[in-house]
Image 1: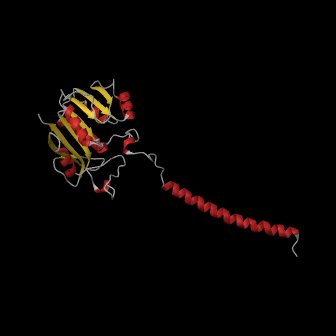
Image 2: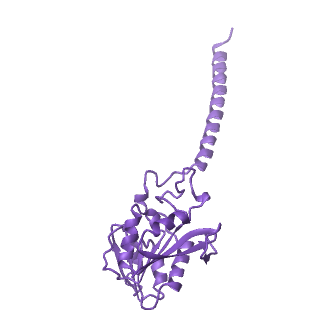
Image 3: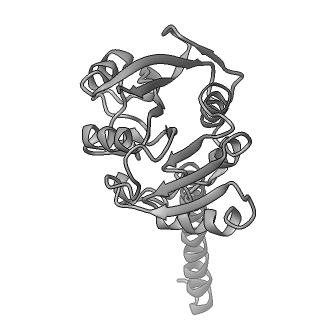
Length: 252
């Protein structure tokens, strides 16, 4: 016969063993959860669409964009030029264009980007004369007000791109575009861009067909190189082409 004290000791021992087993399982489960949480990142842009995009989400100076602006500066802009930057984002492209241009203006659909550039550029760079919010299609300028318009990494965000192109040609004698070259490493299996903010990306052949529908002379240039450079501007498409950079010259 067990004494009452012995029964209590036995029960406590059994409970302690079960507790150790449960504690070990809890530790193992916690370790798994911790490893999983380190691998899975919360998507800060969950539920947002391309229409919600703002360059203020992850502000940076994109190297190939700067290469496009430098090309415009050295090949299209003159000392008496009025230049329009369409979709200026963080505004650094306008600063590059202002090195030579007489006057620089900018339009943007993104209110946050507009507020940022108004704070950082207006009143500080005397060549940047005006920054405006617009609806993406109607530019608040007279016909051929500008000598040059730059449209850097913008057209891939635009729904009605033919209408957009016509409006750029209305206000400017020359329009320089840059847009990503659709490459396999940046494209999903279904053909959509891996960049969630782009409505679409084009191959050279596809974009060429679109641009030739408009009343303008077309010249083709390409930016070759990796995302962070160094770059080479060429007039022939290659496997190294990162950016499509066509120019439309308005016909007289």
